[in-house]
Amino acid sequence: MLEHDLAKLGSELSYQELEMMRGMAEEHEPKGDFQYRYGDDICRMLVDHENERIYITIDGTSSVLDAIRNLFFIKNRRTDCAEAWYPAGESIGKKLSIKLYVGGFHNYSTYFLCKSRGAPVGAVASRYLMSKFSFFNVVECHSLGSPRRGGEKWAKQLQETGIKFFNWRAKGDKVLGLPFKRLGFVENYGVDLDIPKYKGFIRTHLYAYKRYFVNMLRLGK
Image (cartoon, rainbow, N blue to C red; front, top):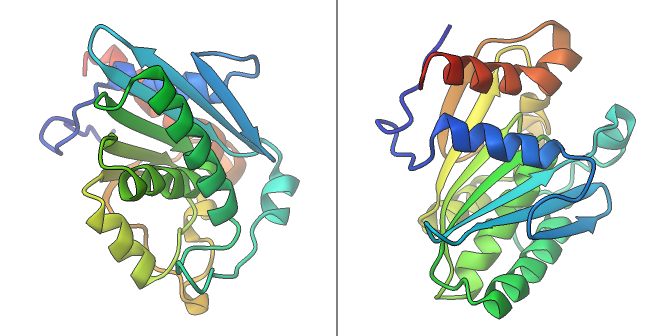
């Protein structure tokens, strides 16, 4: 069992918070203070007024066939990000900016946790908030089983935001290798956190991250 010390890696979140957000992303019923759907992607936001924190989750489609259908291996010429991710991410970013501004959460520390197809969409949304507005403070963006986001130019744009990206990678999760490098896609920018696989490809992609976070909580991490 691999054990990652989040504090040493520079994360301000605990495993308890990560598991709370992971569960929030997978809720089938509305949860949190805000919910927005763009196609197959569901974005949820929870506000912690006491600690002035915003938790945002984006869950990709739960259907394997939908996921395959949505993987357009084309990069947006303007952004160098995959065309499949960009429209959804920008739309979610715009909706979040309005909600955060109207709610008066300008200087709250904001944390993203995004799963599967929702992970690169979340990278677009978090970059949108930081690049368009000086008063939003996106601190971290955690991805669970994320496909590749784009090319070298896009990776540099994410780096320039100052957001800390953490890429949780379960061994045996084939989604991590899509889209292919020969199409110009590079490995995701950020800190890679490798964890054990679960049981087979599908189960690894769906359950390995939950299993790991729950195990860390049992160990008191």
